Image (cartoon, rainbow, N blue to C red; front, side, top):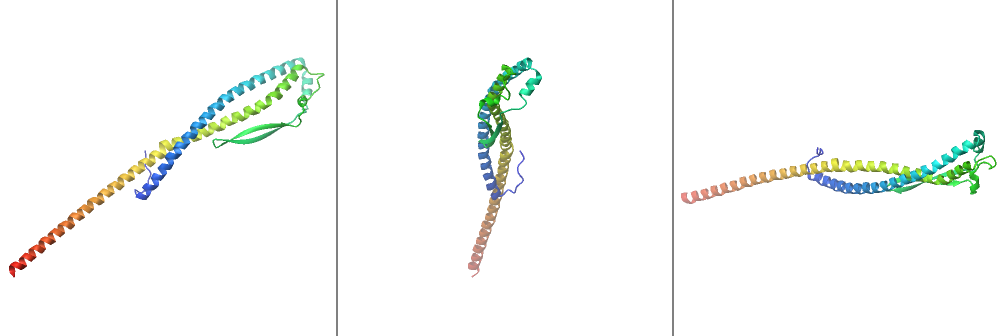
Length: 230
């Protein structure tokens, strides 16, 4: 792993140690977030699968009723019956936060509270299968909204899991090893400089001791010569 290009000083060493401490802490937090996101994602995926199977089964019944209705009714009468709907729907989109991810929440309101307004036609010229199809569509509409919200939440969580996974890998395999390698290099350089300074100090000390001994010997010799020649 390539180390960072920095000056090997104690100030830089302290700064890198702080960065490493923050990186390790952030790595742990991101791993915990990733694990929790995965747990919620799997639960949502199972819920989404069950809900989709339920909705698809209900829509299959609707299609079956429409096929039978189109078989017993002329296409002109069927189109005329469904041309002008009486009931209106307003979709409301809210938000909820799941592990720092904003996911949508769908709700709806009908323009009227009368349940009979789901039939935009009279019952004289239409078949019971068409009535069943319209009623089933009205009943599964809330489930369709719920399915749409769950599938969007699954999609957003999957994107967040991938983004968090990349961040975890970047910290684990790039940033933290780089910081550790750089800290090791700077520590080695500082230790080497310290050993060099100690060696130089020892040499200076030896030179000073040697000079002191020589001066003392010279002083002793001068004193001896003085007393001898006196």
